[in-house]
Length: 391
Image (cartoon, rainbow, N blue to C red; front, side, top):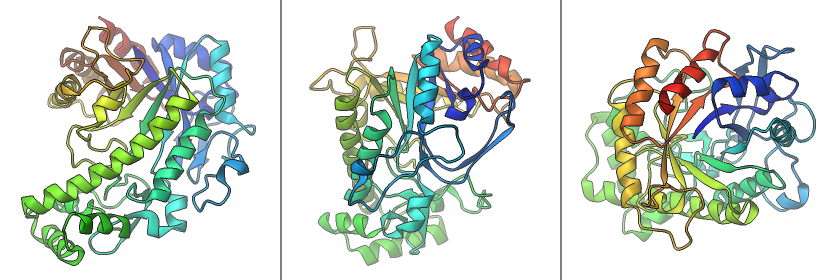
């Protein structure tokens, strides 16, 4: 199974988009239905060349009745056509016989984080990360679950992909980021430990003293020496508990809203990983149909990520209720989905070998980024990689 990513604005107003999907060799389109701020190129669209999305948005109607009494309320996109851009794009693809997976970005929302810093990831120096809503907060978890339900309301999709279904960290990779190489890996890990009030309450419940923990984290930033293992294990447990609760609420809503749809989780085998593909928890693989592994680097070691996640998936306990889209090899394990980009700075010549390595490492599916962003020169790479993966 091969999917290719797209935004609603890539589809709308472009009568040739469906033909490009077919030419790419993709079996389905992963369409952004909730998404963060971005500035996107549209090199093959007939009428535009850029889209400015200045803030995160729900690309479906924002129904006031569903958000009454809440602080965290999404807004609609004013930069796309019509009141329901994702719905319109989904139906347009459906008329062309192209299945759609809804691509949901959950806890990444700079607009809401800026307005409500008490609900954001906060580092050990007391600095808020406004782009990162913290899952330790019940408000954040409820927001993400409601966002998922509203995104999928009356939307005919084959599956759902959950991105940022956990904690984001110090690296944002947006907003003219000027932090590259400023901190070594241990310091980045320490700066990515959330110290918000919600997380501190969870620390205290595990016997940790927040002031002492923050002192140890600040020391780790300054010395590049990690905190004591006993403290680290409790900090990781707190983060994983929050991620499990967030994911559990969202999945429960999705199973009711789109029964039978497959659920794919963007995740990383490093338990300390943060961002759009946060670290997998011990429970994660048992609760989803597939795990999407970030494989944008073409380095040979990237295949190890696929192997590790496949081992996690094989060891996952069977769910109480079997999800609908798992491996057909009799194992019942969740599928492993290799997420690959054709965009710069990736060397096009390295991509075919990269995809072959990922397939040999055990990837069951391939997800390609990105149908709308790829230039005319790189667009044919999508079909090349699809062919290599199926070979």
